Length: 499
Image 1 (spheres, rainbow, N blue to C red):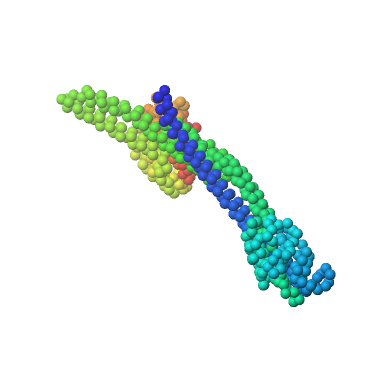
Image 2: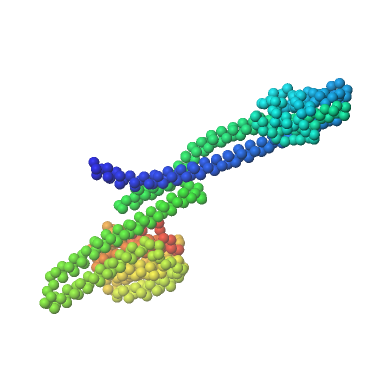
C-alpha cells in the first residue's frame, strides 16, 4: 500500500503542472478579455452618463433662463395679461407670474415679498423650499438677478432669482425659478444603471464565450502536451493532430513546427539506434577474432607473434573502415551532408571515368556523356559512382567489360555502371542494399556490406534513388538517379533498390 501511494505521488506531479499551466493560460486569457470588456463597458457607460447629465443640466439652465426672461418681460410691461390693467402692487405681479407660467416636473416657482415667502407654484416638489430658512435667506432679498446651486434635503437645486419692483409700490419682491436637479437627472441615472446591468450580463456572456474560445485556442497546446507525454524512448511515432488551418494561423504553424521537430528527433534517434546496433553487431566479430588469437598467442614463438600481429592489424584496419562507413551513413541523414553546387555533368562524368579506370584490369568503356548542368554535390556523386565501379570490378573477371555512362532526361540525371559479371538473383535485389548485406553465391563480397548502403544514402540525400537492372548470368547495371537540382527527401523516405 505504501509503495502504491508513493508511485501515485510520483506520477501525479508529471501531469498536474501541465494541467495547471494550461488552466493558468486559459484563466489569463479569460481575465484579460474580461478586463478589456469591463474597461470598454465602463468607459462607454461613464461617457454616456456624463454626456446625458451635461445635456440635462444644459436643458435645466436653458429652461430657467427662459422662465426668467418671461418674468422679466411681464414685470417690465407692468400690465396684467389676464385683465389688461396695470399692476397695483408687487404681490399681484408675483401671483400672476407664478400662476401664468406652468411649472415643469421637478421645477418650482416661488415668490418673496420683503424677504418673506409669499407664493409658490402648485407643482409637487420633493421638499418644501418655502420652509427652508437657509434657502429663503439665500434668495429672498436679492437686489439683482442671481443664479446658483443649493444643496437641499432632496439634493442639488439649481435656481435663478430675479428681483421685482414697481414704482408705485415700495415693497421689494423676488421671483425664483428652481429645478430639483437630482430628480431631473434620475432618468439618466436609471439608464446608466440599466447599462451597468446589461454590461454585467455581457461580461458573464463574454466570460462563457471566452472560456469556450480559449479552450479551442489552447486545444493544440493540450494536444502537444498529450503527445509529449505519450512519446517514450521506444515509440517516437506519435504526432500532434493537425486540423485544416488558414494561412497565418500561428497555432497551426506551431503544431507544424513541433511535428517537424519530432520528425527530426525520431530520425536522429533512428540513426543513432541503427549506428549502435550495426556497430555492436559487426564489430563483435573482429574483436572476437583478435581476442581469440591473443589468448592462444605463444610469445616465445616469433613466427606466431608475427602472424598474430599481422592478423590483428588486418582486423583493426577492417574495423576502422567499418566505423568510417557507419559514420558516413549516419552523416548522410543530416542536412549538412551535401554541399550542392552547379556542376557540368559532362566534365564530372569524364573526371569520374578517369578515376575508376584504375580500379582493376578491366575493359572500361565510357558509353555516353550527358551534356547538361545540374546542382548536386560532385564529391558525393563521385564517391557513389566509385563505390559502384569498385563493386562491379570485384564481380567481373579480369578483362571483363564495365561500362560507365551519364544521361539526362525528365529533370533527372542518371549515372550508370554496367558490368559483365554473374548478375544478381531476384531474391537478392533488395537485400544487397541493406546494411551489412552481402550477395548470394553469384555476388560474393569480402567487404563489410556497407558499400551499396552508402550509395543509396548519397542518392537519397540528393532526393533521388538507386536502381538495379540485372539478370543472373548477364551482369548487372546499377544507376544513381538524382534530380537536376538536388532536393533532399522527407525524413524517413526510402529509396528503391530495384525495378
